[in-house]
Length: 121
Length: 107
Figure 1 (cartoon, rainbow over the protein chains, first blue to last red):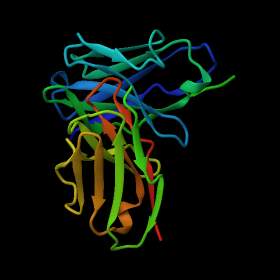
Figure 2 (figure 1 turned 90 degrees about the vertical axis):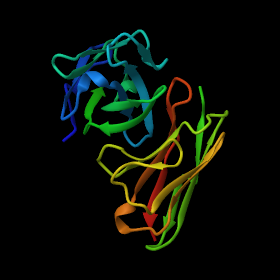
Figure 3 (figure 1 turned 30 degrees about the vertical axis):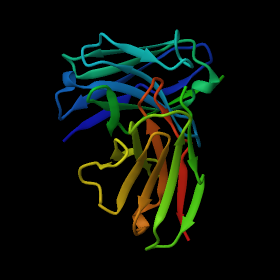
Figure 4 (figure 1 turned 45 degrees about the vertical axis):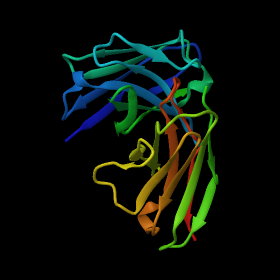
């Protein structure tokens, strides 16, 4: 079955770095756009970044632009999020999500279980 | 950025009730709107896409409607397992944005 499994979360000090991974299985990973979406404790959902199926098109939310880098390895069925210069406000559960693309990237139809990133001294 | 405003923010209803949540976009988004359900401690789950299409495997008591700036999500007969927070999400423009969520509780 379709599955996404995130890893790499943890406790990091402000200004530090962390790399999240998302392992995909059960579908042709290279056919799909992928996104990272986060949820601060007790808060709503915030889209962070997406990458096209080939990796040629990438977008970021303004809140992470210049600090986070999304990438993918289609040979390894894996999605990544390199997070640098982390701030307290980046504390959240980070989800990877598969994104269906019709004419444009649209719905998030499959989500991982999430990995918690805590930025604190 | 397109702002998505859901109402109400929380809702208490009885089993069997008809429940309606609204979502208003700050500009015309055509039908580029999805609805998700999130149960405590779990990842969100897609229920409705393109404003009114039911995702495969989702019970038919869930439905959506609307276009332009005003959208509605309905549960025709509330079940105990429907207790969750519900989010709308637009994909007309980047950044993709979500409503603030509607927390649904059983009365």
